[in-house]
Length: 469
Image 1 (cartoon, rainbow, N blue to C red):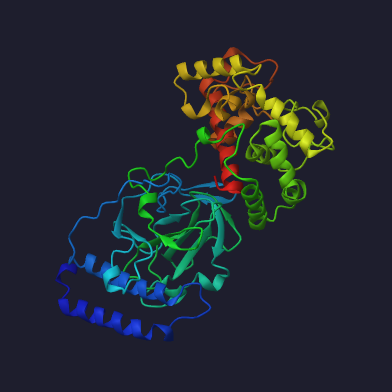
Image 2: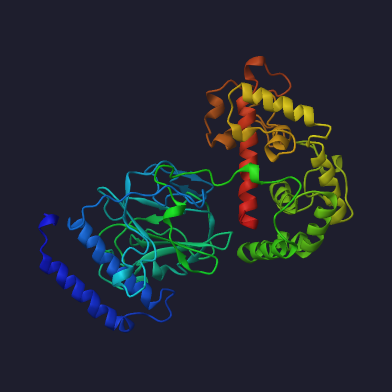
């Protein structure tokens, strides 16, 4: 049926585009974040999609493998969802999706104003049936109120500057992503919300200038300029690992002092975390200088404080990093520090033990060999001097699957959270007395390994959230 659409209809559509181009300023709200060129771009984009659907263009569109980054996920979510801490995720494998329009593919007919993103369709999808997810973690900057999420799915209006219902997210590295033409009423986030990679932000729709249900996806660089998203996304690997522990040095940072301080300030501006401001941002220069003096990565100093104490010292000890405090023990079981610099020195001394020259080097190596021989995930072990090596000894889940366990004793308490499975310990042998467990209830080598990987992933996420690295 579509292939029988007459050339006359396409000619009329083209004339409409030309006429609308001339009259665009009559239809655009100057207060809207999308400018006139964005609106015109969407109109011409609609024309191309109309031609594609009508069968006028038969070339196969192939998505190039990602070459510039492994941090962006395909923004089409999985059909299956899961809920964690009140947030809905669709981070499984996506349904079959196709790229129908490239970045800048119609530049010659747009008088130099190239198509500002790429367009995805999902076979057989209707309005509101397909999950759209955050391609990267970040903070929502649009929409700013509920009036901006109920535009009709009729494909004929300039609502939202031609984007219809859309979500724009700022990421920790200063870049943005934009998700356009979402279904009426499907958007689940608002400006100021912190969203995580894989979190559902809306449903694929037909709002704004659109010829059918599809997702228009954009990436903006740190100068707020649209860049080609294709090199950042790979259909063959739609859910790449966002971060690697290999790049997280224990001892040095690639950031200058001014960059370090600027990123600390940016994190506070995005989160308004008062504990961070009072205890860390206000001491950013001291943290950087002391870290350099004692040979520890200042990023790791900040990240570990986030993961161990949420930037709040343990009691009145000045110990933000859990130094010398055994799981389940009180603050007084560890050292007390009179200043940030003194605490950083204590943290640096602790880390040194996990390096090649440190006292725990042989334990790290043994842990590496044990987990390697067991065929465990590489993410959960490493050699001395690496973050994975250090965490393989530091992140100890407990010898037994004590049920239910505690945050101090580990066991089932940690396994349930780690695997996000409330039933995990019901299908694996467990015990009720941590001090009187049988051999059958011991945690396995690879469970220990997975817990290390879980802790590393958390640190890498915090590093990305704060420093964009």
